Length: 152
Image (cartoon, one colour):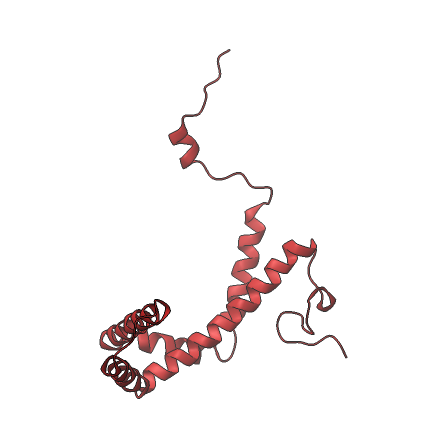
């Protein structure tokens, strides 16, 4: 009986082999998302993000500000002298952007979301590092990854 050798194209299209069953991970991820969405403050956080996402002018200003900031940073790292007018122009754009309450609320919300994501990632990474569900003593600092100190 002849067996077919998979073609390189077929191997690329196949799901990667994994040691873990992803179904319970997907279920737990959905439960995590439900826990996040179920928080009392989630709707307020979402409104701050949604307000920004639905404001095309503000998104354009944010993009422009980020691009200008990156360009100035590249120039600085390359040792290029940055003219005062470029710095002043950037600061003016930043001040105008930050004067918009939707922008500042979005940035605050973005920071909060990033902190939650970082903490979740930290616990997941620690799980793979220590080989079990991490406890406060598994962390290099006084925390369980979510700011709850277990050192008392």
